[in-house]
Image (cartoon, rainbow, N blue to C red; front, side, top):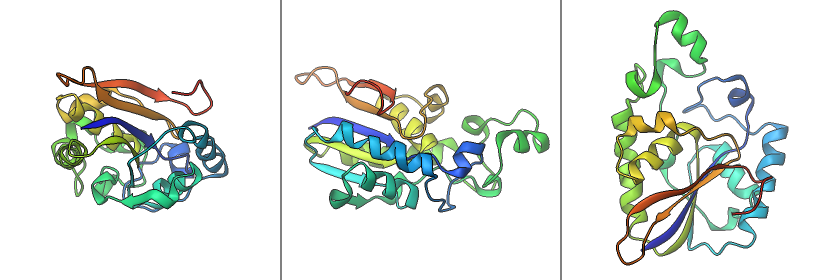
Length: 197
């Protein structure tokens, strides 16, 4: 049974800094994103990992590399960010100027994904994780991370709305008891420049 799952959001990009929804667009890390991602090596330097997976997007793969785990990286397409469809590249304010009261986790994106569609991808990831051993790291994206954590603890995908995670930060999913495994979120939105996990 998997013991710990580290969920890592990629480092800052120019688009994430400006609040632009970045799904399919392959934006690289900013200078700050590169620097912050490199600090993740402090976290993973002393962690024994059985597997490391990343989204196919450059920003996630580069974060994994800078964290010192590039040689272990396997690509998992299910770890890709929410497909924002027609809203790709727009900020929330720009979307709400056209669609009053829009909320991602409730309304989804025309031409893209709904919360339940992202939740279905997260469920596939959870099912695979439960078949692994030891500790695993996942390098992925903000909104997908939030949905994955929600599904890990049996909540609807929309619960992810309540789980903020910043760039180059991570969370840990685990089990409360080994003999009667209740899935829990052990840590959330921890920065690599804070105390080590």
